[in-house]
Amino acid sequence: MLTVLQALESQLHAAMERAFPEAAAEAAAAGRRLDPQLGPATKPEFGDVQANGALPLAKPLQQKPRAIADAIVAQLQQDPAFTALCLEPEIAGPGFINLTIRPERLTAEIAARLGDPRLGVPSVADPSGAAAASAQEPPAPVIVDFSSPNIAKEMHVGHLRSTIIGDSLARVLELRGHPVLRLNHVGDWGTQFGMLITHLKQVAPEALTTADAVDLGDLVAFYRQAKARFDEDEAFQTTSREEVVKLQSGDPVSLRAWGLLCDQSRREFQAIYDRLDIRLSERGESFYNPFLPAVVADLESAGLLVTDDGAGCVFLEGVSGKDGKPLPVIVQKRDGGFNYATTDLAAIRYRFGQSPAGDGARRVIYVTDAGQAAHFAGVFQVARRAGWIPDGARLEHVPFGLVQGEDGKKLKTRAGDTVRLRDLLDEAVERAEADLRRRLEEEGRNEDEAFIQHVATTVGLAAVKYADLSTNRITNYQFSFDRMLALTGNTAPYLLYAVVRIAGIARKGGELDAAASAASSADGLQFSEPQEWTLVRELLKFDAVIAEVEEELLPNRLCSYLFELSQVFNRFYDQVPVLKAPPELRASRLALCRLTADTLRLGLGLLGIPTLERM
Ligand code: ARG
Image (tube, rainbow, N blue to C red):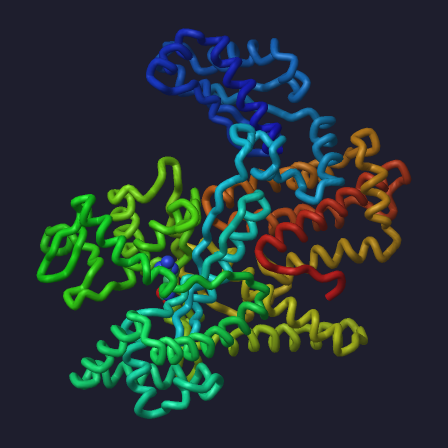
């Protein structure tokens, strides 16, 4: 429907210009254009689209908005492209123009979707697509920096959120045809390794020379001990600092030890990624080590670098501390060392830089908790002032809130420890399995063990992902197994069940594929019931929803849409006969079922959730 809406927008705009040439000229002189203000109709009886553009013209034109709307409509009716697209417009209230798309156009749109694996979503990589019309060059990469846990520390629920949200955004961008670099900016560099290596040399030297000598659990414990010593013991601090210098200057023994520690953590992270079907390219902080001096040099020559109390700083514009003085981003510490911000600056410089020493990206997206918002705002500002961000390129922080327990406090185990991701996923699957066994028992169904395991795993993991993605990411979100596994409400099981229901129609003799291909010419489709039209209109919103997620980076919009679609479908299927429909209507209704299933499958796939045929 996106193309239909775009056509409508330009038809309305042209009609406004024809109706009010002086106002159009005036707007153009001011660098504006007359805006038809299109939006979805607020009620089904108002049609499909509402244009509110007459209202703001009332004052400058000194006319009643209804009269303005009349004049626009009169012009619209002269446009054959418009009359082929819409029924006669209606003017409502003070001067809203209500537009109803011709049913045959909606039917034609449905027919086009039936054979289209992209379900109408245009690709920027497609040279025939309007979006790529401007350039023959391949689209520039989009970078999604997500997950990004820290070596020698456990991956926590915050990283899980980043992983799930980042993966979903990457999938949406990939569907839109962007080459996406999914980067795992793991914390694999810096002072923590000095402490850890120094400590391990004394207490578990084998960990530094032999693979698999310790597991991540041990490593995390060693890390805690090392941190405690570092905070207390000055001699230990000095040795740790020396150790970092050794590592950063490429000492082979230190590098080998560091490599082993990273491998150990990496294996554990990978186990989580495999379980959740997440693809990521690791490019940790260490990757940018060779570029750190150039960052400082660039800032220096841009005249941004200020030495403050021995540290290299860039003072931020418009951001001040409690004392009213501008806050700095520290890029080089007093001891000459670099930090998290320096690395992020190097990363920005590299990501927008041109190959071979750069990714040539046009859009870079960071998915982390909202607690890092100030860090990114600062770093982005410095990068902009340093001139590293090309014109028109986008640099975006995608923040999310905290994961809380049902008590509204930070998520903890009963014993008060932080929750390990592995345990959390295990519990989701176990609970899904218990629910499933209970349901099978109630329904008197007998299923084999392989089926039970497959369904429980799919539902359990889907529930965790969906619960996270379906809330507006900015707000904190309360983790509740009971809520996320419920079969009703805006949950993964509810959506998965809608897909299963449609698969069931096929099993009961509804040949969905045959119906879809028979009906895929617009002549083959016939809709009459209001529930059918509601479903048609809902199905056709998919491409616009994808465009919105691509723009605003809010996966919960896609979730709300899929939930609404499932509800509209269920109402249709409960109220309108499908398998028992009269022969001339059956294929059209089966085709709607098929398209609903395809839309749910593609949509859930974009959330990283595979669907089931039975559950
Ligand atoms: N490792 C960081 C953390 O655990 C997240 C890194 C996010 N990405 C970045 N480019 N700073 O909080």
